[in-house]
Image (tube, rainbow, N blue to C red; front, side, top):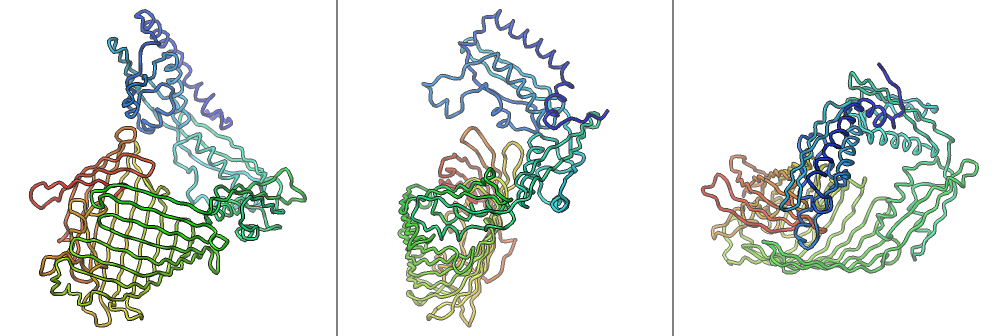
Amino acid sequence: MIVKIPYFYVSKSEYYFMSLKRNHMREVWMLVLLLIVAIHGFGQKDYKVRRISIEGNKTLNDAEIKVNINTKAKSLTGKLKFWEKAPRFSSSAFEDDIQRLNRLYQRNGFLMPEIDYKLNQNDRAKSVRLVILVNEGESVSIDSISFQSLNDSVYQSLAVDKKKDLPAKVGDRFQDEKVKAYEVFLQKKYSDRGYPFSVVTNKVTLLPGNRKADLNFQIDPGAKCYFGPTWIKSDSLVPVSFIRNQLKFHEGELYSKELIEKTQQKLYDTELFQYVVIRTLLDSIKDGRVPISVRMQEKPRWLLTTGAGYGSEDRFRFSGQVTRRQFFGGARRLIFSGKTSYTLPLSLELSFIQPDFLSDNLDLIINPYFSKSNETSYRVERLGSGITFQYNFSKYTTTYLMYSFERDRFNFKSNVPLSYNKQDSLLYNKSGFTIGFTRNTTHDIFNPKSGIRLNSYLTLMGIGMNSKYHYVKLEMEFRQYFPLPNDWVLAGRIRGGGMNPIKGDDATPIEDRFMLGGALSLRGWGRNKISPVNENGDLVGGNSMIEANAELRFPVYDIFSGAFFVDAGNVWKESMIQRITDLRADMGVGIRVSTPIGPVRFDVASPIFYGKFNGLFIVSIGHAF
């Protein structure tokens, strides 16, 4: 039997009809439970919810289920607040929760879920432990997706979009939210092509016996429209002419919601405004032209931020930054920042940023700097500046070209540099160009759970300015994050690089060579401890490097999560040479505590294949990668 009904009734009327008999039986058993509770004097006012656990759920994780019920237990952080009372148990509220979970599973494509429970009562402690038992049953899958439209030009493009990452695809499990998301997707598709009044409805053909559903969307595009006048309202000192230059649309062009969104993002990217609101005044359309209203609130011209922290490598560290927005007008910014820690006793940097230099999406960045670094075997001071042209292809992809000049002062702590590591001049110039490329689709800067991140650069050093060293350096890093069931994440990284002296030079500068080990690298070794040494035993870095890391991250409880990880890699003296047989490896475990500034990380790692266990304890902020 084929039943054709509107989408909104698939998850309610149709599903409930098929499970009506089972639900009546559940009501009988729930009534029996309430009678037993009443007989034994199990008062709702006195008993607390000690714990809620879930068994049998495969598709929806514990967090998704618990957020959809009103019965709650104390979280781990809540238990620390011993003065606060635990949530009370209500049998009527719990009965509603069971029904709510049935509807939740039905909305997610399961026609006949069976939600049961166990209730463990502790009369002495006047508490209950609830165990929700889930039998999901079989799910309904999408068998076909079709469209009907009154406008052929936009309709034809939908066939092409079937190949892209759509809200729902044939073979997916049927979900209410996916169908609704497809409606929104189609409305936006037409709105981006001049039809802001498009209306999308759907018809679902459900084949209960085959566990299949056919989706058919009907699209009424409405009237075709164009951009009308744009009214800008701002209480800032930013010139209106500057704001108009950021607009991606102009009066008379075909209406497009996508261009409005790009304009809003462009204005946000100037970092001048606290908020930007762009409204389409559909009720003021005249002759098919849509007026646009742009409103914004300017950020403070001056901004001061400070920070302090502690890490097992940096020890105590402090930082500060002063930002001056609208420096000399427009979206120009001037940023002065400073840092200090054990490994970086002093770092000062001044950055001047000119967005949209010569063309859209091309930024000019000038940043003079001074720093002192304290490494295991040497100290180095750098005084220099960089001039960077950065082009933003999209919010995910960027490329840049930088010229840098710096004057370095280098000192070995042992004062006995020998062999190929010899640097016979302690004060010298370096001048060269770097070209780089980045792509980042991870979306979450503190705790990425999906996407990729690619960073690569090529440096040619030794161009004019009496540059002492001449070399080529290439480095690439690739990260990927794989989301797993129950909020687990598998994170992986591979990194490699090499550098080679040119123009007759026989060595590269030690401070630019590769070193591995530490909180952000191979965690079984101390910071930069994986390195070739000179004849005096100084760590002097190498000209080739490879590193690989894998980390399995999983939730533990509330703000606490854990990780198992394995790191491998090595550094070689020779240029552009990596030997897999020489790799060093470590493994370890860690705990992360979520905070507003990122996860606080506690790791214990030990080298493997190198004799007995030799654990190294690491405290840091943020994931290793």
